[in-house]
Picture 1 (cartoon, rainbow, N blue to C red):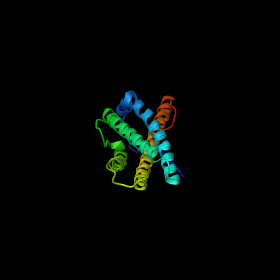
Picture 2 (tube, helix red, strand yellow):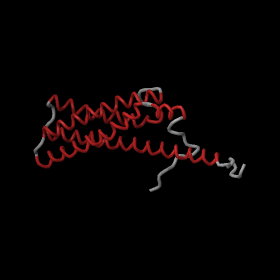
Picture 3 (cartoon, helix red, strand yellow):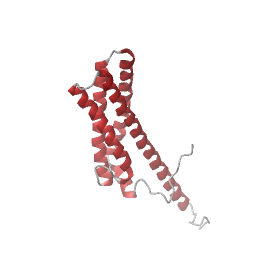
Length: 178
């Protein structure tokens, strides 16, 4: 499978000012810490859900883990919105992350539906676990969207560095020596 690389004709993920704001923002570090924490919580919770579904044991532990996972999701969504405001000037749906944010709304809706169903007692334990797994599938897809975007940003930045280095080494735009 060939991974597309950003080209000069494609729109860069960040403008130079946005990249500077991203690099200077404390919220970038916060996101960089919360994302792997949330993934770790997700993995533990997923294991507890599968344990309950396989053995019928550990319902409370699975439920608590899903609540903790949902709270970490809320934390990363709130801080991510602040990060987007700092970098792009809007809390959600900034151009470079529009579709990721749209899908994030589904992720939030499913996790929130789980909390409502849990505390209302409106679903059986198995149905709650099915809802949690649906929420987790959307989380994995959404995380993949963000990882892909991060990869594209790195490729774009590397291409700009290579272009700058080529121009700085005496090459002209036509490829000859200056």
